Length: 89
Length: 138
Image (cartoon, rainbow over all chains, first blue to last red; front, side, top):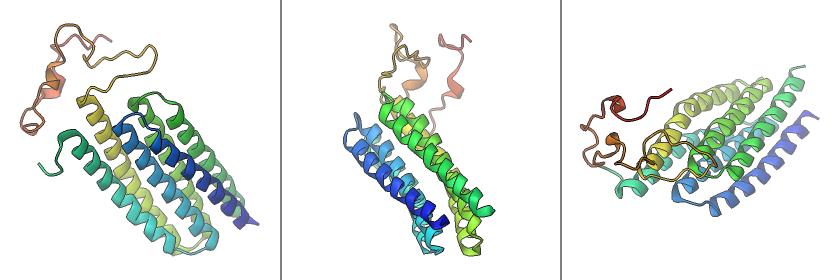
């Protein structure tokens, strides 16, 4: 019964993922788009955590860990390339 | 018993994340979207990570704690980078009645700590902004 809560939350989180893809598409500026992509990765991490809890399997959390580490690198790279035109100074 | 607490935490996390996504949908510019995207959504993820400790599995709990530590370290960094880039590129504040205290809207000249070349940004110390501008009226 408690797994049903996790599955329902994962389903709702999938809806939030679709909404945030829409937010990425209709963003007004480039920085707003980068911000929406960052938020999309956070929602994806939450989705993986919920799936891992529902199935009692820890493998999804490894992917969530890698996403958490990659998102900050991707955000900093995108913002630096957008603002200064180059990645490495 | 702990399963019910985990259910309540999952519900709380989903509600907080929904509010965060709605905030990003609703807010008019980057500066205000940062509040929703970096605080509300991150707090929702943190609540979900706490809820995953109710499973009692050691592997899941250790990985959840590690993800929480990484998110605590990296989310403010990315939010700060986005805010700094928006500030440097003089993105307009679209909020009605927004007061720009940084000096972008001043009729005579710009804020002096904005004139540093980004290429030589490392050594051009702004000295904490300096109290010479017309800011600081609190």
